[in-house]
Amino acid sequence: MKIWMDDRLVDEADAKISVFDHGLLYGDGVFEGIRVYGGKIFELAAHLKRLYESAKVIRLDIGMGIDELAAATEKTVEANSIADGYIRLLITRGIGDLGLDPFICKNPGIIIIADGIQLYPEELYEKGLKVVSVSTMRSHPLALAPQIKSLNYLNNIMAKVEAIDQGAGEAIMYNHLGYVAEASADNVFIVKDDVVITPPAEAGALGGITRGIVIRLAGEMGYEVAERNLTRVDLYVSDEFFMTGTAAEVIAIVDIDGRVIGDGKPGKITETIRKKFFEYARS
Ligand code: PXG
Image (cartoon, rainbow, N blue to C red; front, side):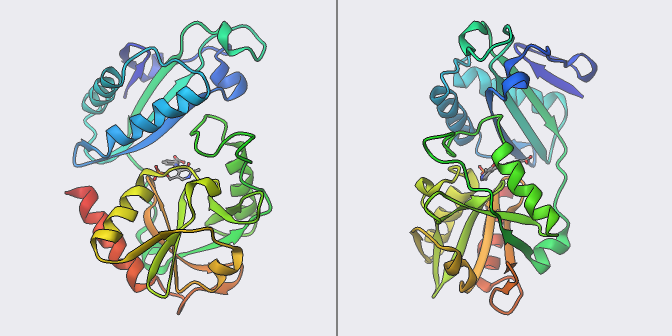
């Protein structure tokens, strides 16, 4: 495998980072997870826009323009002959002395990995997922704002651990006001009385690329779509419930905290949206 490191492709064996990289020492950096479908990078422009915005918020100068980074990403996909796969693009703060000050790091680290993707088992899409509400609160917007896709994922990881401990496929996280934020690595949607509803990004969610596409496609299909705060009870009494994300695409949820959603099978509107997204992504 060839890995992009800073300004060129190197062999996997040579793709190493320093123990003094602040990305490792402090989780100081930003990243993206991007799909490749049929050799084409899915929504690259939207992912790069989000990456540069995340970097701006944390005062990280990527040191390379968007077009140059896009070209490097394309080259990495080509070098590894990835037809259907997954790109992990990381920008680390770079090498510096010990100590939090990010500005002692002179050059950011740029890493692009293009690999195959570990797909969720098909059975999960047919049956739907069981999820649980977790006690780990989504980070407060005045702490580490959830809109930043940073290398510090401990908030989400702690939530995921709770889900795993309870034998659930995903964790539903709430914000400091008790409203639904998102899952540990996916955005959430419900369907109630034929309206497709997702929490607003301000509720503490990452502005998911898949979420944005699903909102658009659902609207184009004639569904009413709303961004509205949701409570735990709204999830419990929803007609349908699903999640969106780069890895999962669109996946139904059929049980939350022991409350069965609908008839316990993926909902009709969810399935329609899932098929539409599947077709769109592969077209
Ligand atoms: N919320 C969070 C916290 C995420 O990390 C999403 C929502 C969905 O966003 P997108 O833009 O993907 O629709 C994410 C995405 C991984 C992995 O390897 C994680 C994500 C995406 C791809 C891979 O764990 N998170």
